[in-house]
Length: 232
Image (cartoon, rainbow, N blue to C red; front, side, top):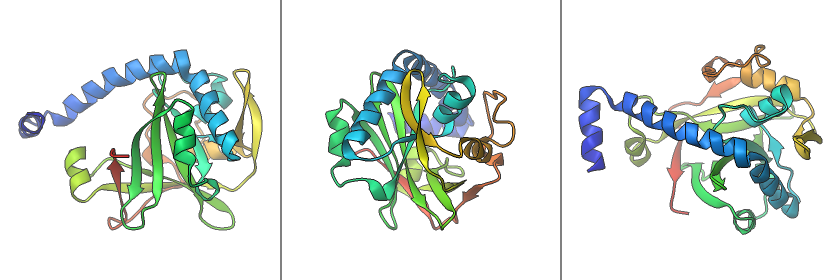
């Protein structure tokens, strides 16, 4: 039934509109959960990684809110954290699950099996973990999938996958900084990271920020694609 509805919407040219409408409703609900349970969820994930001896650091909207607003951004519908991929123990998933999280989805590159992002949920709050990697002696790369050029996501996942982008940031130390009464790791070069992620306007709230304009974001060739795995 779902495939039939999708085909009809695509034929009528209404599919993307319908997806945007449904996502808007879902994101509103998720944003309320972040405001209510976001801090507890973030603390719980930090405790899981601390137990593993891994530094979990704030990135993207969660880092921006912590630095600029000293709070979660009101319209942010999930949490964003990063870890260095080469510091993760083999049993990291089981440790996270033991702290009450549910694993929702994993984004990976089929060609080499590299994990880009894992999405978890607790208390109705979604939290994306970005597997950050060293690019060279001076920079890290934060990898993530983008929307398919024209296909509905299920169709894309079953065929040629999704394009991958890499957010380049300067290497630096991660230091504990206070956010809402709890100390979380953040990049020492926090303003440089935010400038690279959100341009020079990062201190100005922009609800529908166009992330394709950032100067240090690289889109990979068509041959380098990501896929979603829900069967974990």
